[in-house]
Length: 214
Image (spheres, rainbow, N blue to C red):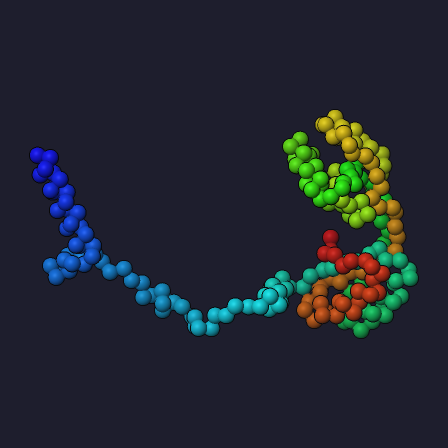
């Protein structure tokens, strides 16, 4: 009985192999042909496909974003005059230069650390105890971390006490930014044509960086 079963299995396997290979097509037994000619018909000029250069890809990406808004400041009075001259030839409404006053900012600070590796280790420790951190706005305090920013020293001290209760031991309160006043430049709708002229304006910014509007 076992021999008969083995023989039947061998015959069945052989028959399936012959059917799958198309050997039984003459008897009307063959698998359906797997072809999708409609996919070739759906292709639109495949010969026109080409790899874009990095510059071309950046231009296309920039165009897709559309106009963007950039700001810089506060700028001091000495920078305001030359900046107005640099922007005098720009279209009306393409820029504004307005007086601005910013209060001081106090932070709960951790640092400075010897290197970025120490910063990464400290970030991992803070994540483990569920304490949030943020990037520093003052480059002179790098490498380090801010555990929160506040308009007054008293508010920062209160946050420091709360964090100490959660296990933060090496933080301290520092003034990240002193109160400042001056001028704020806004480029509200920077398109491709105006982007090409931004480099002519940068020398008049007094070292300030153009950043996305907020």
